[in-house]
Image (cartoon, rainbow, N blue to C red; front, side, top):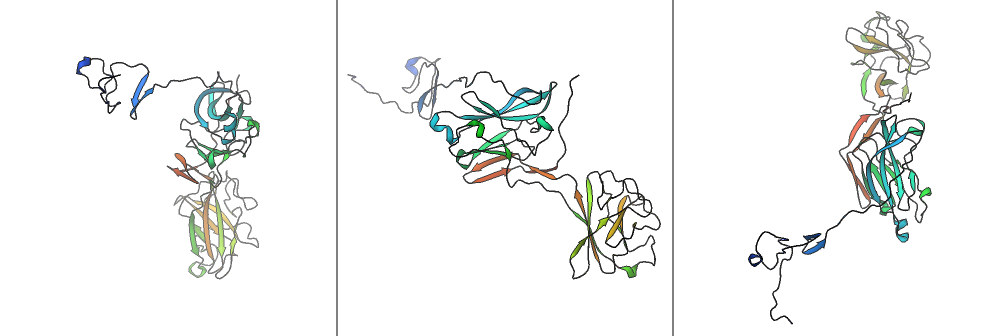
Length: 352
């Protein structure tokens, strides 16, 4: 039995010190250790790495091949807890001809099963090669008690995968889908609101035609179209239809009320007019080279005191993305929101 007991306090304060004589060390200093770490008021065995799986064979569609694995996250799905198995979700590069054309998502179960769970809609590319945009900023967060996993690449809308309660079959787990309530929209700024004052204009159709309006900007019809309305005081609003101009109609003029994306308006003449006048409310579109702006002229069905409004509608929706998304209880919090005009991003390759 020890004749003298020396208490050792603050066991992990100093850790290991090897280059000082033992007689000069305090009782709570270690002179040697192997594979140990001293933290949280205790001595811990040093952790290491162990291979979770054998080398993966990642299935890719359409003759494409897998590149690097960019992101992997553990999905602690409650359905698999009783069987002592679990899921991992990982993101891999999709390559065609050695070029990265996008990213695809995969669900991996620790028994070795891999399923491609890339969404089938709302993404870039065509056919079997439809996938996420290439990104190195993937992240994830669990939701709904672990039955739901949300991933985000910072470029497109966040996507989620939701498993059914008590489902233990990996093949029954659905593909990722765009997060509900994360809808994009088309921008529609109002560029004109004016009241028709025929008494202020000259008689006939002249450059001072009171039915001729300048929109104050030149509209790029490859990216935008026009939505025009008229409202008679104390009445409902009526949509107006685009028709070819009576003179200098330009190339690929409106047809059936639709302004095509390849429409190039003609220059506004000295006597602008719609063609034909028609029985409804119609307008023609011109370019004014003097002001470098777009003009519209209405037919004679627009009368005194009518209120005309013109909106520039983007052809492509404005997509919202976020830099980060995290779940807190029953809430999802997104940060670093960004709005961009969506474009076709995919690249097509053909091997020769």
